[in-house]
Amino acid sequence: MSSAAQDAQFSCSRRSFLKGAAVVTATTAAGALLAACGSSDEVAQVAAAEIPVGGAYIMDRWIVSQPTEGQFVAFSRVCPHAQGDINKLGEFEGKKVAICAKHGSEFDITTGEVLSGPSRVGMSGAKSVAVKGDQVEITG
Image (tube, rainbow, N blue to C red):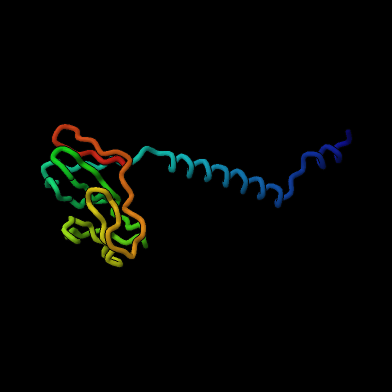
């Protein structure tokens, strides 16, 4: 094989090099993104004493309620209607509710069920809620 043929076989144009670099960069970024998405769920804790029986407690990302003594449930504060902040507690037709500040949807604090719209979908529940000593641990 002549020297010119060898040079042609292994030559790399600037455009080819940049395309290859872009593919490698995109692949690396996609891997990093998938690794971040696959990370473990965030765990939040609140003292069980902060959550009244029959009531609820609003914390960082969660509304945690205690329907009956020793039973705890948690729901996301993100409203399913328009991603508003569910940040108030009140009453609706004799039930304790969590209220979205954006459009006023009201949700049952014990089931997450929507009681008054505009939301048509209930609050999203936490993946797990567990009592660890005197703390309630919520995993999203």
